[in-house]
Amino acid sequence: MPIATPREVRAAARRDLGADRKAVAGVVLVNALASAAGLVGPWLLGRIIDTIQAGSGDVLDTVDRLALGALLFTVVQTVLGWWALKLGYRYSKFLSVEGQFNDYIHPQDPFATHATIANSTPSMTCRTRSG
Image (cartoon, rainbow, N blue to C red):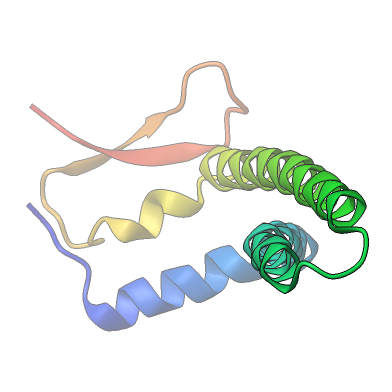
């Protein structure tokens, strides 16, 4: 089975990530926002514990507000995580439809042939292993 050299893999990764810089930036940004939202819940839980241990003031009201905040940030993290997955799937589909994966198979493979992808544009080809 043909294996790409590390240099070929790096070149293919640069090309794939550069194919649509806005999409890559969007995927990274939404994942970062989902991760940041996921960090707020444990911090709020720590604040709830600190509030209960301190026991001063209106503890019940403070705990209720902090718990509501933790719930809201959990929902925000879930929505952002779903959106990040959707963007990631869309970008990976873009790469596969554009035929960006062709160069991952070594070009000198004597068993590799070009075959037209079914139900796609006629110019789009991918490498397959023959018989």
